[in-house]
Image (cartoon, rainbow, N blue to C red):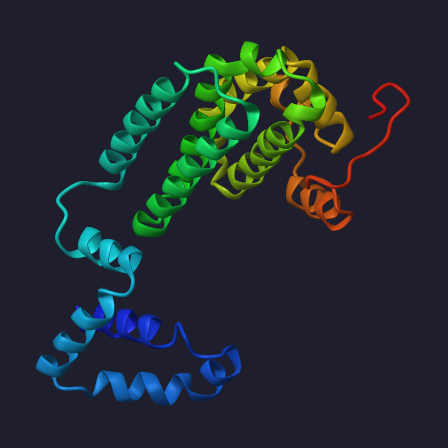
Length: 243
């Protein structure tokens, strides 16, 4: 128990210290924290937790919450579906749609930071793309590529991230995502703008459709990013899909 609080105090206290100072004084600081009186340590951590909501929620989850990681993931799935169903009732512009997707993505990131749910990091991000495209794909196709471009790049970027994260999980878990990944591939192929952006940014939709994700997908992703692709500025120019 004390080790958890010690780590929390250190993380909070050093958050505003420069990296070089952390590396120089980390060991000494840890020792000082470990020797603080329990009462003083309790007061300090409660004061510091007020400044870091995510860490406070993580400690609450680890020490108090009776819900399991799976239960929290289920709650988040339900919330995501409800949120997407709500904003999909409106004829949103691509920009507004991307704004809502980013908000939900931020909530997923918080869930992962609090619960360390690596499985959920894949499944929830995949759910975000599937639910959004299932309910908004036809609406997106009504806009010109120029207007939908940023949204499409965002979606393809998230799809890339999902494949990278999935590859980091244990192989026994990969099969759980095959059907949903195939569905995502089909939704992308139904949207000409998404297909164009995928090709221009080095994303092979067949990876999804054929459940044939390269073992070096992370290296592929890093290489593409290092060349400036998957951003709103640079894309591949191909004879068939000139911008």
